[in-house]
Length: 413
Image (cartoon, rainbow, N blue to C red; front, side):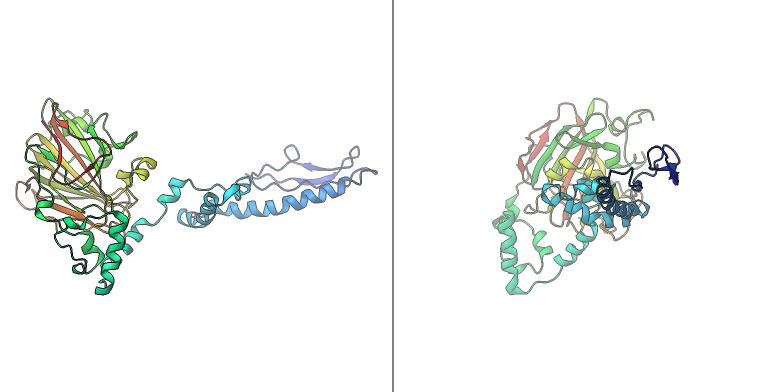
């Protein structure tokens, strides 16, 4: 609360004007009025220029404070819109050119907050529409050749190598491979579901999963609340047990995870990593921030913020799940056997999710998937996260940061 001060009169001893109030100064932060003083006793004529210069310096500062103070009264979207240009200039301009603004009450958004405020969903939908525009035949080869050169695409593996065959960018992104290009390993129980880079793998500990080394996210936030035991054969663990313990169905088993990042130049389809049955699908609408490893180190719980499709079910050792995580410019996530799934919708409620059961709705035991069978596809590139139950002697045959291709071994017993 601002307490106003009023001028009472001159002090007979000092010749200066007195103010009423607490200690003679205003208590309104960010709106300090310049002190008005008399010229003072005779012989102190040098004080007048100083007083005037101080007033001239404080007057624009006062106006700027009032102007910037209006930001706190705005709605959150309007506040971000007004703060955007100054924040961007604050980080781009050299020598701290806008740092004086911080002394009068303005604070720039953090780099993470600035990035989160970018309308990535809108941009991704626009990119998806652009990808579906049919290109003239004469323009296809130059456009695709530029993409191939930029991201190092190996077109010798494509089922159709002729660039004129692909009518638009979307068809080019979802190109199929030659049957012999990706042999499926039969010796190991779990194979890579896609091409990509191994970001992290290992046992799930303390109900947290690593998205990259040193940066974790909550297992329950990522998968969502526990699904009913009628749909999945969860262990009959007491309610007090952790979410991680409730996912383990067999005594002596552990929970494991593996994160695979698909770069823009990678093969964009993903396949079944093992023989299993898909019982349930949970779709989380959300942001579409980049899942590049550099951004994943920067934003905590990035995978929990982004749109994702969680497929859960069972394999021979118990619980098994595959999650397709969306990213910037990924216009859609498609699951071939799920025609009701629609991703990247214009509007959604933050924190919401949609469930679909392949048992209750289709009166089946789930969707059977064979190892290596086509499961779904991305547009452009994203991330696959595997979380599954296995005996304690399960071992990964991986190194963090290594490149992997669909069909190669992830691990075995």
